[in-house]
Amino acid sequence: MRSKRFALWRRCRRVVGELVLPDPFDIGVFVETLAAQRGRPIELVELPSRPATPCGVLAATDRADYIFYAADTSALHQEHILVHELGHLLCGHVGDEVVDDAVSAVLTPNLSPELVRRVLGRTSYDEEKEQEAELFASLVLHRARRGRRRPQGAHGLGGLESIFEGRRGGD
Image (tube, rainbow, N blue to C red; front, side, top):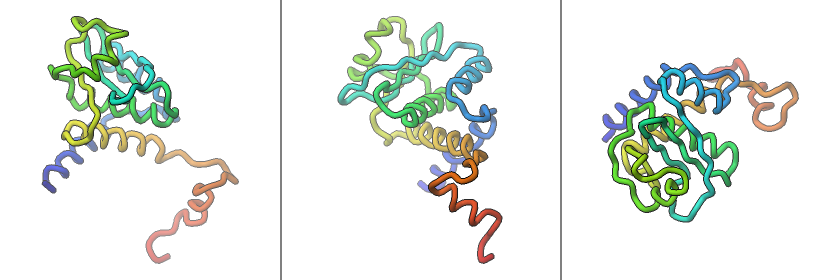
């Protein structure tokens, strides 16, 4: 079990390490850059949340990759959802999975079932693919924010960070 988690961690770190992230991080710019690198469009589609449906869905068609995401949540949560779904895309999780009823209910207003050739819809984090996409999102967003500093005089933990800046261990 431990070696499986370590392999997952290594894979995610490798994939994330190869990415060029916009600075400052902007999810729209990140998506556009990935689409250009992959040579196919990635379209973001906001949808209202519904009970028992995933907050994000990745659908790949012959024309483009679509990421459906919850419109009625915070911007930070939307960003995490989008990066999670991009994790599925970049980790190669797009396959010929069966579309379940919850995912169909999300997609039907926007795409005909015959158009969608590959869909991943998720509501739990039990599967290894879900764990990998979640770890991918966490690593990307951590890396995107790692170099960012709060302005002088900012409130919150940013102020505490400046007190301890440059100190290590028992200094």
